[in-house]
Structures are given as C-alpha cells and as structure tokens.
Length: 199
Image 1 (cartoon, rainbow, N blue to C red):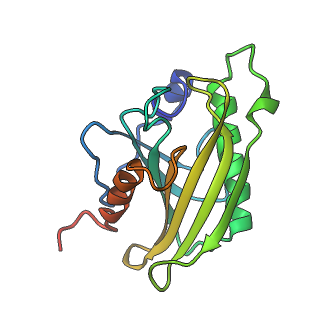
Image 2 (image 1 turned 90 degrees about the vertical axis):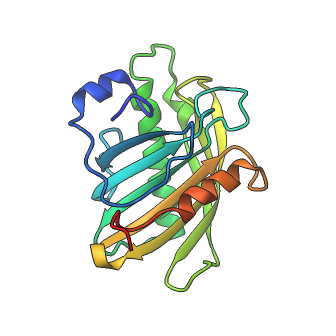
Image 3 (image 1 turned 180 degrees about the vertical axis):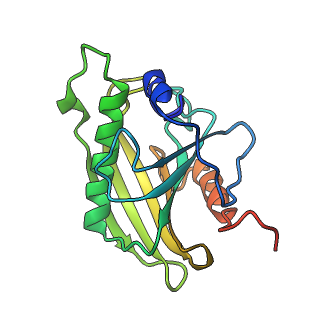
C-alpha cells in the first residue's frame, strides 16, 4: 500500500507496485497509486488483479473543492459478474478496512464511527455489454478530518476481452455530479485503454 491511500506502516509491508498493463491518463497535478487486489487492508474482497488510482490535487486537503475526489480502476482476472448488492457489500468491506488500517495507531479512533453504508443501484449503461451503477457511500475520512464523509459514486463495468480481464471503473467525489470535478473524472475514464499498445 503506497503512502497516498494508507499509512506509512502499510507501505513498508507491501512489495513494489505491480506493472500496469493498461493505459490510464493522469491529469496535471494529479497523483497515482497502484497495488494488488485484494488489498492488505481488505483481504476478504473476492477479487484478484490490481487497482490503479488517480487522486485529485485537493484529495487530502479539507476545504478544497476537489477534496476526496478521485478515480480508481479494478483490473480483475477473468469474467467477473457484478450486482448492486455485491458491490455495496464490497464497498463496505473496502472502506471500513481502509479506515481501520489508516487509524491503526490512533488510540482515539472509534471503529463504530467508521461504519460504511453503500447505496448504489444499477442504472442504464451507455453501451451494450456494459454495466453502470450510481449512488452514494456513507463513509469516513481517516486521513484528515476523522469524520463521516458522504461520497457520490459512479461505477462502470466492462470487459477487456483480449486481455481476459473485467474492468470496474470507479469515480468518487463528495461534490454533486454536476460539479466540474466530475468532468475531470469523466475525462480520465474516457482515456482508459485496455492496452498500452498504440492502435
């Protein structure tokens, strides 16, 4: 686990970040992170592959209009089915595990304060063969405010058939989906390619 999304202690336990075989743009000023799935902080997640993240410049700056605004990709082995019910359970496991890992040395931390509830439902996908989920996640910020946090979340699921992979592309922000930061998140998604090879 790199320093951006968890604690320095976790970073020292993790092996070097895996090589990323797909293409994902990084806007100017944004930061990146890569780690294997399932992550150390959520070992019960039923996925194998890697996760690649793009953090906005204000991701860890309370008061910034792009605070906690980021995109991340699950690059998953094989054909992985998704349902809203499973996705909501997975997000609970993911964010609660992250909070407990980051707050591990905080003696004032109350795990009950970091209880997560995800409220995603399936929506109409823009392309045939894809899935789309949208909703909110009542989460917790273990990095800066140590307070509850509500994220708007959009997830798009599609196949990279030639690579034998399923992609779940997550976009998250406390800002409403009409805010300009969502335009940046969407441009990152539009820039995703299943392979780094040029066509």
